Length: 476
Image 1 (cartoon, rainbow, N blue to C red):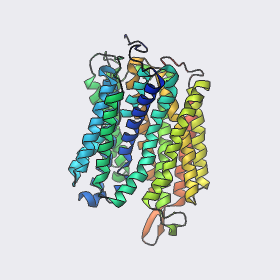
Image 2: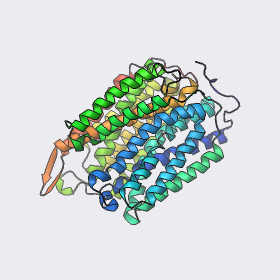
Image 3: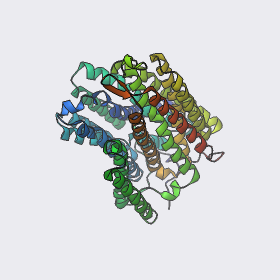
Image 4: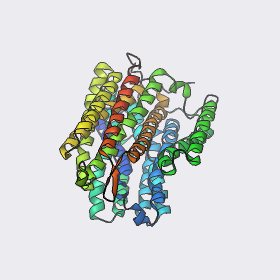
């Protein structure tokens, strides 16, 4: 199958000032999308009352975004390879703005779910941004730029939490969504003004059957994972969805291996470097998300528990915020280590740092400053590893498949975080403590989750160890 040249000479962004602008604009877009994913966190306890719905129904405002993002990420990546990455990036940002506006106008559950689904469809912005960088930037800038773009996912989440908490506590809750719409509009305008469209395209016909099959399989899988604890893991619905997901994935794989222009080239995906990186990404996603599940609860639980720190959501956001800055600060270091020793080494180093951070968390959880330290160490490891993952993927796939390959890698991380949420929820539901009429997760439960996250990071380290010794940097 013919591929576009490794780099279209007439489209490469030349000159440091213009390259810096493109990187800044794309990273800003990534931060805006990750902000969207965290802005509802301060609203979760009061969302049922705000929307006039039960807690179970209101949870769909969260679940819908997860499902829409999972479906959109691989589809948008493939469409970007075929019809233009900048074009799909702009469409994704427009959907984000539209979804935010719908949520900003919502006072009931149905329009909120619609708006959150539209926001979730923008999840492909970060892999698209990384792919645009590969097409447009000089080779000597690519490593640090893609590391910065990868880090934007964590940065937006960490910085968005205190900002969202501040707005939620002091203004009408609709302001959160109007702020998201405004930021999305700014990102759209900046992309229009400063990001060129690449001439690197794969062409061909879109694999609609493959897209429908993968979407159905992902929805079944993630719906079972996200709702399993609520329904009961032995319930017919959960088991049926998991079984349906397995069957759909098998049928989808059979189709993808036979169609001329597949949504996901499974033969490329099966290459050792791509396969192991994606598996490590899923495991790493599990490890990464545990921090977001454990630390906020420790900070907010009543002091009467003996281990809770009785802080407000705003303080929680401030405590988590530095980890995002650390992730961004680690991006250039990640690029330097990858250039000197290869991205395999960077990924392994990041996994070790994350494991160390969670081990510290097991013993340091009695003061705010200790949890800030723990989150910063974990954030440093995430910053290192997230910069290495796209480097490993892009070194092993053709240029014309960059967006699809990066999107699949992002999807694998998302699946890992979803599994992490479900497992942590199940563990914390079993390990509880009672204080008067209040039943809360026990201190031992939080330590178990952090130990599991450390083990997951070490598993990612072991998987990364089997990557090729000298990963070729083809196409960089």
